[in-house]
Image (tube, rainbow, N blue to C red; front, side):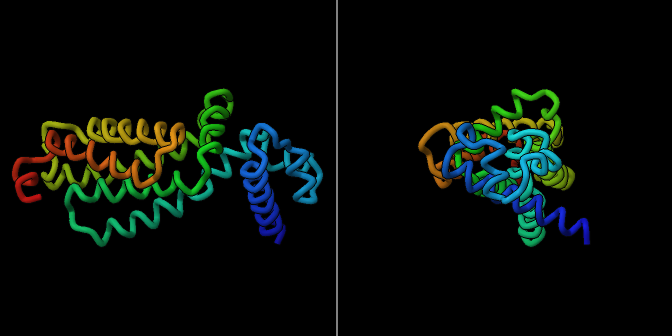
Length: 204
């Protein structure tokens, strides 16, 4: 009962914070603002989150498990081809698009600016995406859809770095989600020409 109450309070704090961050901006929203709108004491907020940056990063990371589960469900129904990589990247893109661009920019600033929090939240999101991507790539590599002389780790690193650069461009420009997906697919076509076995490339 107590745990459920704490969970509901935590969810209420994050929902309120998202509304205020979106309406007023991250920098112009204080912990006191969040506390007042949540009808809680500021000290109560700090019982759940060590700082405003920690609150933001935790809020952004809450949906990661749901995204991975839903994307994995789609993968399980798809054929074992390089299209699985497209499905994953589309799923990752949709996750990032759930939150406003300014919030992601603030999250990156909070993560880079706080060494104590650098191994949490945002980095955990990236690590889980990379692990999911590497799992798919390893499966394709094991089944000889990808070139055996290239390691799954190297392929994962290359593809994720390309994805992350597109993400940075997306949150810092006026580009849309669909433009990001299109650009990623175009670049992945070039990457696939180098990592796919010739037979897979021919059959695709």
